[in-house]
Length: 424
Ligand code: GLU
Image (cartoon, rainbow, N blue to C red; front, top):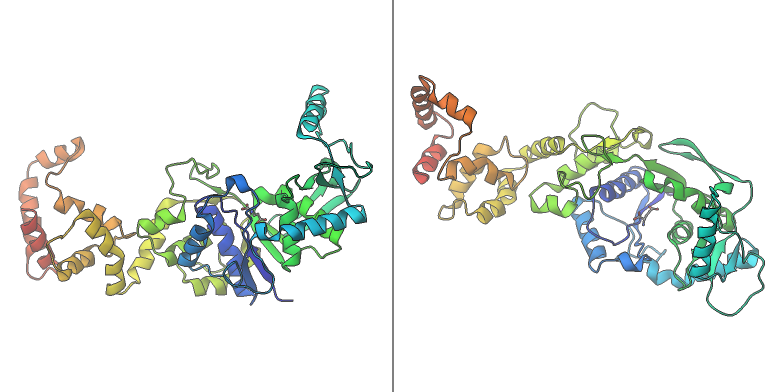
């Protein structure tokens, strides 16, 4: 059977590093096994959708090199690939489940449900489940939700690609809503039904979805459909071991920001692939093709993945060094221009400048930082630097250093001369 994997973004904002990682591993798995990689848009949470969310995600995934075989722009025969265009399908299946007795209509109003919940809390109940008020109600007029009838005393057990043997008890889950009053499905129902209808064989996603899995398994079982194989990847944490949250401003977390800063997509791809996965070989620097070749799902890590910005810079620097002169120049040129560096200089001057810093350059915008000292009118020295500069003999040493830089046999002498002339 051809493996079919999917990335199922909700278009609620910019492409986050965590989502990019989910997409990337599903992509790697599909490519490695000669399968298909599908992008399905889960846009049923209407209030949270943002207007350009879909285009933005697809654009950035394409930039990263996470390319897909089927989606809203590429029909593979399993569409539509946007959930809001599949509402009739969800309703049809909800009705089928009602007929078969695995789901029922619930006429309780939100106010009634709230009152029930409050009473449960007041009684100190530990399971705040829907008390099945409507389970045997004859059909009546008026708005309703559709609830899944959770089987009694059933254990939902599965072998997770990352977590191993996982199980949940049905008694911990109340009869949950599959279709809301407005006809829009809930995430768990739409997701599982679509995974079945789109013939998804493997689901790799973040471990924050682990507790959703038993509900999704209920849907597969109710449909009499085979369950996909799941893999729930560990969290991404910051250097202090804290879950990487969008509020943590010390770490850049959105892919478009990296693109703006002049990070290389192949380097970012390489770095993200090492977040929670390690190859069997010692190396850390890979092309996309090499990553596909090395990918093995049994090497997905079981402990949290640490996001280390220094490592990202290191990986990017290694990819920068692989660029030919033209590509390297194309990477930094917009950043030089934005900073107004070498405004009145020709391309040769700029190319020599880039050549000098090539070894240390970690991303496009880094060129501005690296060359700042040359072009700044005043240098700011901290107290420690001032102490050193005041020491005996430092003046003479600096003069010799300057001479050496300008000596004809120094490979970059021309550039230094130009720079010194330029900055007076
Ligand atoms: N739409 C869900 C999300 O963005 C997808 C979860 C899944 O992969 O099942 O988190």
